[in-house]
Amino acid sequence: MERFKDRVWYIHLKDCHPEIANLARAQKWGYFEALRRGVFCELGSGCVDFPAVLRWLKESGYQGYRLVEQDVVAGLGTPKESALRNRQYLRSIEGNFSS
Image (cartoon, rainbow, N blue to C red; front, side, top):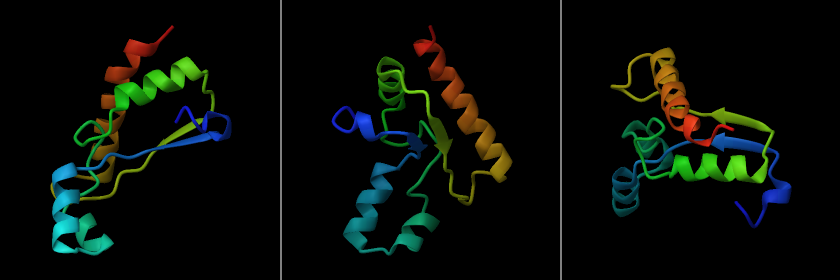
């Protein structure tokens, strides 16, 4: 992110379940099969270091948009419930980077 910080004007947040991603590669699943199997999980449940991302955003003075994309996956409940959990997770870690 640091290397391209002058080009960053929009942040798209998405998390990835590493074990499912590894299995998808090993089994040669297509995109939609990996998606059905939950490769993209709720924020904080996968391998993305969101505290580090938010820290970088704050330290870099980023003022642009941040969007969370959450695929609808069986077992996560309704899209609204999933979105609320994602928002709750971000709020729980954002406090560490407030002024």
